[in-house]
Length: 216
Image (cartoon, rainbow, N blue to C red; front, side, top):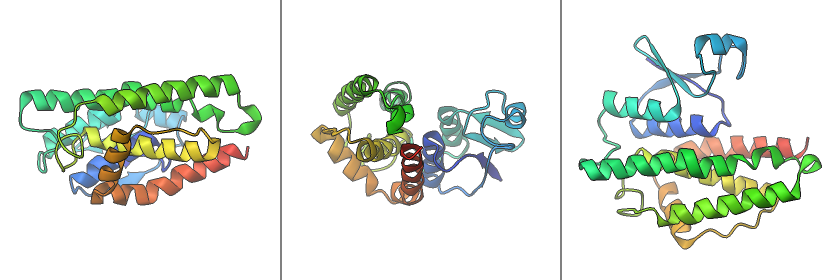
């Protein structure tokens, strides 16, 4: 049995759940022991990060490592292309999400509460997000998704982060203008049934988090 340690509003937990859905796997989801950031959970997962996956006596953390493990352990349906160069391209796009786009979006998190909002910091974060969106729009795609019509490992992170960004835009009035390539991609990836199923539960969770943070 696959056991996923996760919390509802976590972006990277949603990314991992999407990979599990796309693989049509069955998993048990539990909250971190003692709560996220607790000493109890850190004793179980040394890095203390979420998500974490327990399977066949192994405990693995970090969403990207988990996705790669699931791809190798459960190779069908494949979420990496057959060709070496295409596989490298998809991995590169996935790293762009984790190291460029998502971190830029994350800098807005502590600015959601209007009582503690710093307009200069928000402006700098917004500029960084706009830059990353523009770069994302220029990434090579071979189809409506990152590679054809089927989900790849790279398609697990982007729809989650773009959904978070939509919610933050609404709550913080960022007035973002998405490049056409991003709007087209987001529309196409949301039509995927696995993405739609994950967003059905994730979107309300992240919206509730943002609304609570805005009311602090």
